[in-house]
Length: 165
Image (cartoon, rainbow, N blue to C red; front, side):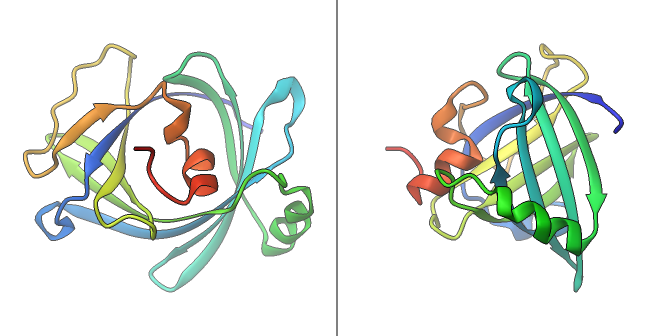
């Protein structure tokens, strides 16, 4: 399993008009959390739908800081996906979201929209370093950085079925 270091910031944003963004990909994601792995790593599987194609991935993450994590991610078969689903955490509802990937000033943003909100979304950006300057898109109103706020994790949002007040 190849290991990589992921540095990512997450922002609560007002749901923008996606037609005004330079969208490169639109992806439907069903994300299911599994029981913890070695070293208390977070494990998940995803069913990904894009352009009529379905793929599956397995991811394992170890959180080093609120914005830095060690990540292993790779594609799996549908059979492996179904076998792993028996390890679903009972305290985590599967996450349903649509991800819009778009470019802005040589930065690749990911905007996650959820079926329970027509008002808010989560925008993520992978960084080269934790203190990298971010040039935000003019058409997206950033409300706040939620990188370190566990209430805005995918698992917490799915369990609550809404954004925190």
